[in-house]
Length: 161
Ligand code: SF4
Ligand code: SF4
Image 1 (cartoon, helix red, strand yellow):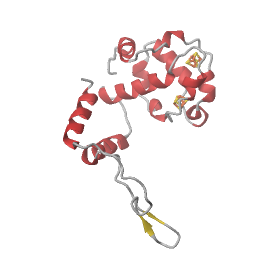
Image 2 (cartoon, rainbow, N blue to C red; image 1 turned 180 degrees about the vertical axis):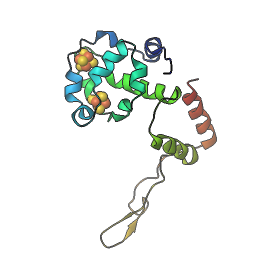
Image 3 (cartoon, rainbow, N blue to C red; image 1 turned 180 degrees about the horizontal axis):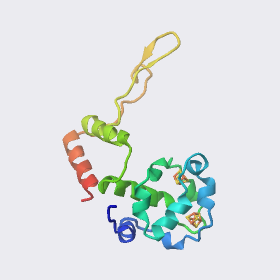
């Protein structure tokens, strides 16, 4: 098992994070779509984080089930932010070599190469007419003006510096 000093690192990484205020009321889990259909329970994530059981969480794929809908933040009566904890745990998983979805590596490679997860795509209608953004009168997709500097900044963020 990889050792992680979870409590101090999570606390230092999250301003305004009231994790000690959680009274385990369960309102976050009852509104969570990932709890309804998958194994993610924000209430349990907060409880395990409080008990410094972060390594156990990161050894599973549970934090990657979050749909980022923010229901748990909206519903919490104690101003705890399970969503922020989950995002922080995702960052920790990548940084500390725990499980993370393979698709993330591909997305990151694409962002570094193109400045976007994927290039704008054309669409085809029922008559097999092809449309691009220009023909649909849509604005150009914004991308980093200086890709090299953007990638440099991105790498610094990923290293946590
Ligand atoms: S809603 Fe807030 S207080 Fe209730 S269990 Fe979830 S995080 Fe804890
Ligand atoms: S943000 Fe994630 S954990 Fe919170 S309710 Fe939505 S899916 Fe569940």
